Image (cartoon, rainbow, N blue to C red; front, side, top):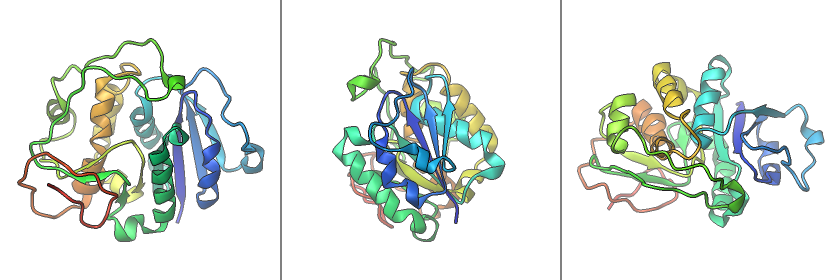
Length: 248
């Protein structure tokens, strides 16, 4: 089994990759920041064959990186692709999520239907979302760029225009998950092209928050879920992913 990790980095130190690099084949560091001070203690020279650094413009954050990587590596995607933000060590919970993903790599296809996310919820068909402003949690990731509202009034309108009208059953957030190649390539490439365009309008964008909330729909439900539709409201309860996500 081949496993690749994509890390979206702005100004964070990403020494934490030492916790996962020995478990995977390749780590792609997508640098969207103005500097190359990636590490303080970790020695990347030991892993020159595993680490690949790609510089990208600072647009679309982690979701843009994921779509860009998928489209540019479509024919060479690994068996499992892991998406991680550079800010993992700036939040205790993110460190926990990283540990959970590292432990589950061998089970993504066999136990989790090709998609594992530590922050994984079940939602109802009325789930919707909008946001009027956003500031990065970490000071090092903040800039003076204004928040750009979407051209669509809310998440459901954006989803209908770019992806589909199928009711959502699942939601994953934080941009931290592992997904099987089959779940990625099961989706028409046009969907990824639409997403890339939507995520290329700036760095602090409402479309990025919409995209963050679409991955469980695409990679878990859209590809393989055969459960009956959820009929309850869009309220959710936070729980580490299990075979049967919880709803309220």
